[in-house]
Length: 568
Image (cartoon, rainbow, N blue to C red; front, side):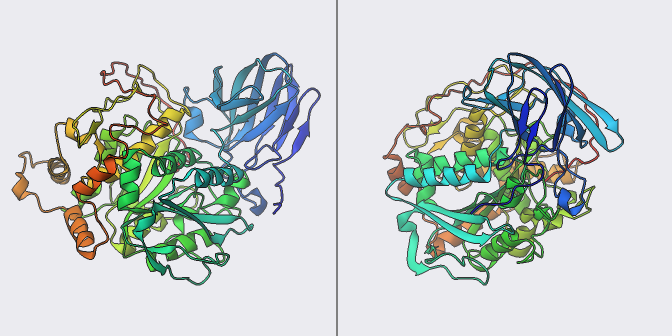
């Protein structure tokens, strides 16, 4: 099906260069030559066809006819976006043919106020690929077409004992497929198929079979410009279908339901945050419309009406423009469940040098605050809506940084829990300041998310937790519980004994699933699964090794306060 191109997805000719953005996710409205190898550019705001002028942030375009030499490009109508204000942020570029990966622009950038509501963002570029097509973007693009090709590839690579089932849960307003992927072991399903809800799965001849295991639901790209979330999800899917013992254990004990792109129209149209009607879809979960927000309506109804009884984790993947690390937005819950709620984020910090537990936000304010532009409350976000409607403890927004302008913390070694031997890995934590679109980062964070789920239930075959001072989940929960209590009552200085800490909720969750027969996660079963690949790390991680040297570099800088800074 051919979709209509937007006015900012066009071909623009200047005296010497041809600019083009007539492709999926492209955004460039105008290009003007103002000097020798100097060009001023205009980009389109999200949903400009509705008269809106917010979110002039995402850009993605190509250039033909460049010669060897230095060029300067200036976007003269950018929004006030904190990412642009950082002196360490750089756009990314790629030459075709010539470049395999997207790379950072290495030359200087400049961000200044142009008008009260408009800013100039400039960068220099030294071209060493004459006559090649050179592309520039805010961040490494991940288009709707890219997603379809990726899913086709993963489906073809899926092992024989792994279920990889694709369904179209609904159609977007423009008519694009919103797919939901089911990944698990083939033995984890009953012979009965899932129900059909009104307006859902209309093009599916056969529905997926009902799950016999607890369900982990993962979604991404509700905000179109947050492309790191798609690369992160790629890694999650790769690990889930791999022979890595963590992937084998995850498939054996859980069923994964994944909607990889909730806002395909916004992605394809080259938007940063909203859909074609200017709506932030991550504020619509409280009361979505089948006709105005079809993907959110489908996700909400599928979760609440079809899989709610088996749902144990809800993870919504995003990217953040101002924080300096990867972190989690969680919900504010009364003790003892708050200790359990924060356990997952602490495990993420243990499993990845890119995660920072202290940057995570579990405040009550983060559940009810309103966006500065449209004043919509976060009570309409997925993680808050499903916590309220399903009383779901493990309901999170996971934020991946566009870049990380600080040194990373050391993490403990990975240990095979059956043999007690350490797994060999290559250094991730080196003495560097900035990570921008490093595939290693997405590999590490994606693996950390899945490893942390395994650690919550103490079934991780390759765990780092045993090499920490906490040794096991129970001690870690006690530590977090004490932190939560002292945070709420700073005068409480003494540590509570383990017997004084109320029983956390994962014990109840695990026991309920075991009694119902839906959670067979006994360690002896995990040990049998480990025999498939003992002491092996996933093929796309095996070439990396961690160094736990302490970091001494302290990077400090100030940036302008962004009027339009958005979170979650």
